[in-house]
Image 1 (cartoon, rainbow over the protein chains, first blue to last red):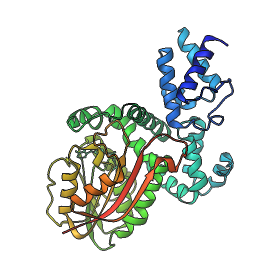
Image 2 (image 1 turned 180 degrees about the vertical axis):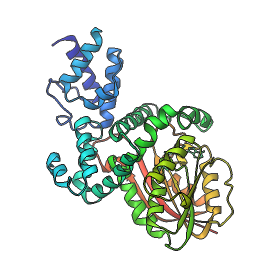
Image 3 (image 1 turned 90 degrees about the horizontal axis):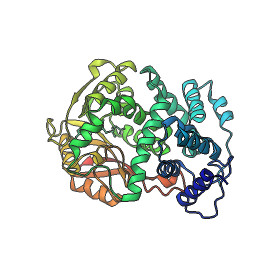
Image 4 (image 1 turned 180 degrees about the horizontal axis):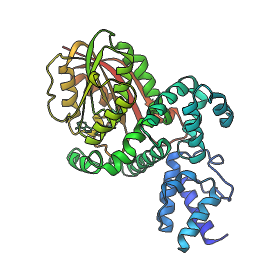
Amino acid sequence: MTDITQSLQDVFREVFDDEEIVITDDMTSENIEEWDSMMHINLIFACEQKFGLKFALAEIASLRNVGELKAIITSKSTT
Amino acid sequence: MSKEINIPEIIESKRDQYPVAAATVERFFNESIVLLRKQMEFSLRERGDYFWPLAEKILTIDQNLGGDPIKALLEYTLAFLREQASFMKTGNYRYDTDSFNDAFAEVYDNPDVMENFYLEGLLVTHVFWPIHLDMHRFFEDHFLSAITTEKSIGAEFGFGHGLYLYEILKKFPDTYALGFDISKYSLSYAQRLLEKNGIAKDRFSLDLGDVRQPLALESNSLDWCVFAEVLEHIPNPKEALTEISRCLNPNGHVFITTAINSNALDHLWHFNNMDEVTDMLSSANLQIVSSVELPLSNYDSKTKDPTIDCAFVCTPTK
Ligand SMILES: C[S@@+](CC[C@H](N)C(=O)[O-])C[C@H]1O[C@@H](n2cnc3c(N)ncnc32)[C@H](O)[C@@H]1O
């Protein structure tokens, strides 16, 4: 597991308050029942904090799955 | 158990009858992968009969104003969720009752907020937020039906986008409407909304006005009032309600809505439960004729968001 994947998994476990969550790239809000609008924002906030970056509105709205979230974090962390 | 729904199929089946709504809802589902998606699925599944005609009406109004509804919706929703997430952590609203002037400077007097997304965003939440959709249904079923069709005169305080004024003026060709709002951006937006959507200029008069002050209207002079989503924005909601009760004639009706445990960019009065609202109404000389309580959990059973919206039709006790 890469560092980002590991940290992101920690974020998911904390936000959804579930130590069992194992993230995969194709995981979507369909796979986690609690993943609604508010949890989405909490997830984004937690990522912003953990990785020290800011998401744009379009990024927040159009995120399709965990893989895309990881890709955004990776690209923002390297620039 | 929730039924499965096929969104592209539903949109296709509505395209002939509700073309503006179908195109905009399609855009919504393309652009928003998570935000409001479960709530919109709820509306399409559970509120279809009411959803589509209302969506066509409101989104046509928006189109006539040259709007960009999905962008405004998502920006408004995101700003709202940010504040609500912070409330859920701290228990505090963004402002308190001493800081109305800050809310005025940062929101009502700020074109980057009002013109950029707030007014249009709030307008289209009546389509895309099921809680506001249900509020609108209550407005039609319980308030519009209470207005007499004879020549009447009424007022909305804090009209924002102006949708409620539009609905009333459209339904009752003999009514005349006054409107007061503290924001010059609300004033120009609502003015345009009414004019571009076929309401004759001589049927309404909109002005700047501050409901924290006594209303410059005679007692018993109004047949109807709308006071929607303003109570939680002002430091003295009870006084404002008392003023509205004074201005209504004894047979008049007022439509009132507010939000409980719900923070936003500009909220400063925190209602903790429905009783606090109903107590305030009765202590402000208002009698409840009908009411509805809409917890967000109605639309998303897993949500931890404690928001409750509520709406009332009241008459004055004189
Ligand atoms: C949340 S919006 C409500 C718009 C509309 N009534 C609705 O329910 O969707 C609040 C509106 O109240 C206005 N407002 C806030 N404080 C006010 C005050 N003290 N006097 C008059 N209007 C006020 C704002 O400018 C804004 O347009």
